[in-house]
Length: 316
Image 1 (cartoon, rainbow, N blue to C red):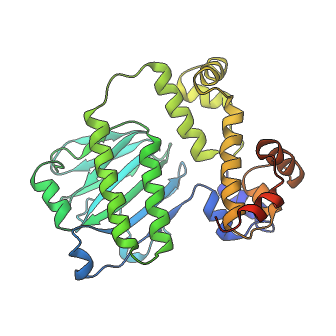
Image 2 (cartoon, rainbow, N blue to C red):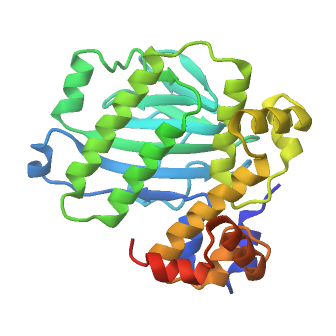
């Protein structure tokens, strides 16, 4: 089992905490403040976050402020809406308005204001959750018109990079807090709701291979800095490593390992252009063995050394 604390302790001399937080799991939460004027816009983001809960870890995370702590042992009510999306692990979601649900990867559920509920991951699996809290007249209207309903709070939409990307976009906007960010964040939240409804209403039976590739790509995209056990990944997907490797190469056009490297190089480009982190720190944070190997691979993939790339793209 991967030990997150041990990993951080080993890397602390090489990585700044900000870089570590940026790359690894991207655990994140924010509680933006808002005013009555902000509410006039019709929709405000009240909370955003992403947490990877390891097996046998406490839930919810104790890192949240005391005012936002809750217990998974008893139901609670909240004053806003929250849209929660689970991408790995399993758990339980219960609400007074509907049934008890088994939550699995690809499940999204909505918490409605004033409705008793509770949810939590299974101890043996943990889970990865993305969430956003919303308030305002416009989401109230969506509920009144039954686009959203407390009687149907669960969306079995499956794993979709488009949903994860929208959450990540929200995180970036809220973290940066540039002028007008609240309106931009609400626009992304509208997009997220629309995407959920679109996916659910247009679901069709996909082939086993399509589902396998989609799940595999999402798995890698959330763990591309790690050393992935491809045999274990195949087992989790219900296929042998040989079949997984063959189907992925045939469908995507590159190998599993090359897809992982592609994601690492993409993140490296972003970090080189947008931060002043030493190249050695970036290499280690992205999971490369050493700076020399990173430099060699980066130049092979981009035709530029990391240093030259940074000089050409700084600030972009």
